[in-house]
Length: 171
Image 1: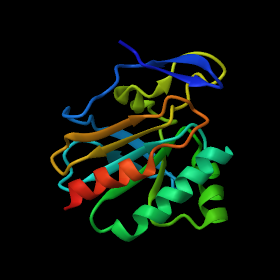
Image 2: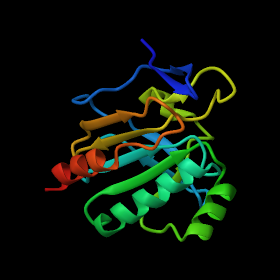
Image 3: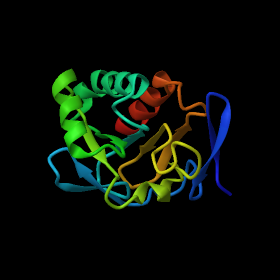
């Protein structure tokens, strides 16, 4: 059953089935801001945090990516951190250059739309085709240990809960 989120109180269905704690994170192919493809999810031998946002060209998403960059930059040796949107690499470059985002990977799902495997692609309304706001923490064996699907798109995630989940997988 598909999950829903809201945009200013209006419900929006998501495509795909939501993932839960304890399941294996699907591998997905994304495009980094340098146009190179990367794979995230699955068992990589290193913990991961996948952060999905609707668009880096919005104030809430821009602030969220900057905040995660600040929080996670010092942990880059211990965790693979990726902020994922549907923004094109050109927009990602502009964002990263403007805000000096260097401690985390910024990637796009515009090419393959693989994030539907995570159940976070908006399936209807004016935002159809972009990603809902969510956070997934994945251990080194590919198992999901934390999921937050932010119920209202205009709100930021629970940074403290996400950071606590990251600390648990890198301990």
